[in-house]
Image (tube, rainbow, N blue to C red; front, side, top):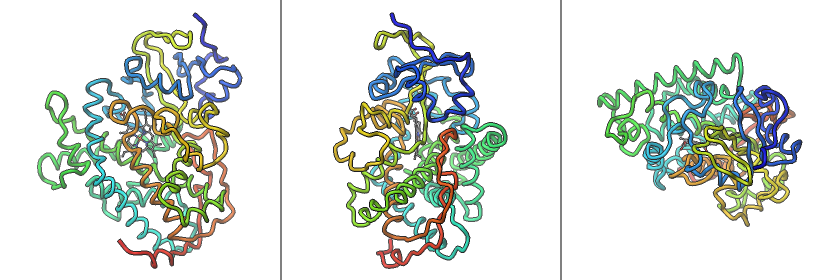
Length: 424
Ligand code: HEM
């Protein structure tokens, strides 16, 4: 049996922090192998990428998730007791709870809420003399929309603070020092607030419409018929609020792509739904967001002549798979037209995980993500004009998650097109 090519150095945790999104790709090139073994936090980890690797990784007979997420990520980004760390029957049951929220009618409600809150915000942006930081503004728009959609009450006066807390959880995951601790305290504060709301719903002190995420999660029962622990329920409700707000980053990447390809902006003004979708898919493929996903080998197996021992951690390079030349021609070029011919494989475009939404750990919010990005792209190209001043638009690939350094500043917003458009 061949030995898996080995990364140099005793432990590469610090290199992961400095190489960021390029950690796997860089080593694959150095070792001339798309599979290699490294050591992170003193434990051996096999790193893989590409469509075939992603088919392997999402085979649940071979891999499990329990206990694989590092504690520091749980303390900030994910929380403890949520769907991510479950396996088998318990996972499928909890996942069904999420998928039951994604009906066509509910997805439409989400798009409408986003459209309405975007328009309200755009009219305010028009009166603002200061720079408008699109990442921060998009996150607030989405926060208003997703709180409304889930049924979680959010006073206008609290939008700024609650959104900042959610953004701190997202940014705290890959951070060290002060930003990490900000993420932790934001999570503690928000989990406590949400679990009190869940308790109020259970005690019927708060009415919430059936079909909303708050209603569904507060009343969800596990396989033994018990209500979820209220802390775990809060973690899963935050599993909707937090990543939806994170779509703000993809929206900023879409704005950046429109800025860098002005001809696409002109074309999209008159585009149909397919063209807008191809553009959105290319943004999700091209720009770096969620870098890797971890799992653990359930039982020993062989793949391509290499042994994967039971208990070994395996890291799938999500961003690297989206840029893999074996699946994508000229992968480092931004070309939405490639989606005219995409084979719709569940394993080559995996910014939100691969496999099946119901059975695997693939992100249940993928449709919401695509929908909200489409709404935002239409707004950016058709309903508003704006100026883009000189700024630092570089994307730092050692930051995870990353964004343009300036967070995308716009100025002098004009919404005359919006006022001419039919109102909802
Ligand atoms: C901002 C865009 C988003 C990105 C980049 C993203 C990315 C991901 C990734 C990479 C995973 C892990 C896949 C795996 O474990 O193999 C995931 C899982 C998950 N995402 Fe998203 N996501 C996004 C938006 C959303 C939205 C809008 C929601 C909810 C409405 C959501 C809810 C979840 C949940 C609950 C899981 C865990 C699923 C499971 O373990 O079965 N995400 N997401």
